[in-house]
Amino acid sequence: MATSDGGHIWTRQYSGPAALHQVDFTDTGHGWAVGTNALLRTTDGGATWTSLSEPSAAVDSVSFVSPGTGYALAGGTMGGAVGATGGGAGASPVLSGTTGTYSGGTLLRTTDGGTTWQPLRGTPANPQSACFTSAANGYLGTPGQIWRTSDGGQSWSLAFTEPTAAKGFSHQLDTPELQCAGPAGAWVLFVGTGAAMMHSPYLAYSTQDGRTWHGVMEESMLESAIRPSLHLPDGPGSEPGPFSAISPSAAAFVGSTPPANGWGAAPLALASNNGGTLKNAGDVAAINEPFAAAFRTPAQGWVVGENLQTRTFAIEATTNAGHTWTTQYQTK
Image 1: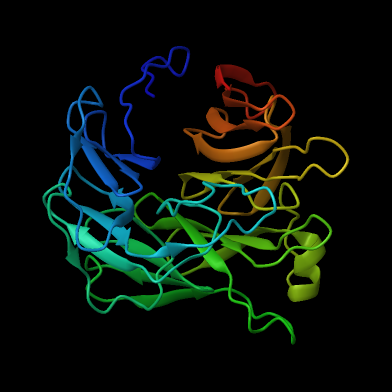
Image 2: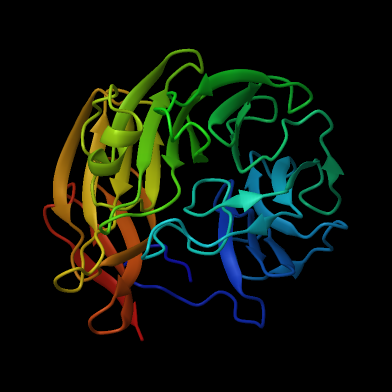
């Protein structure tokens, strides 16, 4: 589906047998769609799509920085979503953020728009997410750690390690979900394993330069036991959901509150000043299980999700930082 008027009208661009789970555009014309055993490319804004041959290991997700240059995770396996409701992108790894456990993948690079791919040797073991701000600069997440490259993935340096867990939890390394913002900025959501009393652990951090990292939020009930000295602001929802990096100093996080005594909710929180403040903005209207979020500014954004009560799926839009929401598209 595509819109050219801010979401008031949506038109179908492509329909086929592939179970698509990610789209990635570098401009209004050049984009890619990834699905189960499928990699599609458009050069005319989605009017037509061409199927690309995949490398020996099927492409799981892509991150392009220009019409020619892009990166991909390929050949990995996706575990179940961490939270009870799924959250994020559900059962697919997305380089720009998801909730789930992805393992065993390989980082690839293309310089011809995805026609051919080459593996990047020397990538840290078990890459789980990645994002790039240019052909040279990018971040890669492995269990509990964030790495940075300035030479297109030829070499990597350790940029950040999540805070050490207390005794009894130290064997657990969280899954990092990365989104880049600006020349050197990045936001990461560390998603933990396990659940208790309808809660799942998570942490969020951000950086503007790749060197100094700031704590943004945590799921306080479980994280207070896992990392009792951390004391970050309480994030939206008792389980992790999707997020959207707006700039090096702003991001929108949508949490998930499972249906304990009702149908659940999808609360929104806006982080600013590189994680310095976290403002709760109420629940996203009309949905209670969020799948994805995209914000252009702290005021204007979209959230896609499901209403578990009516069993409908919707695109919800806000232009005033979540104070009010408009249903732009809805289907069963």
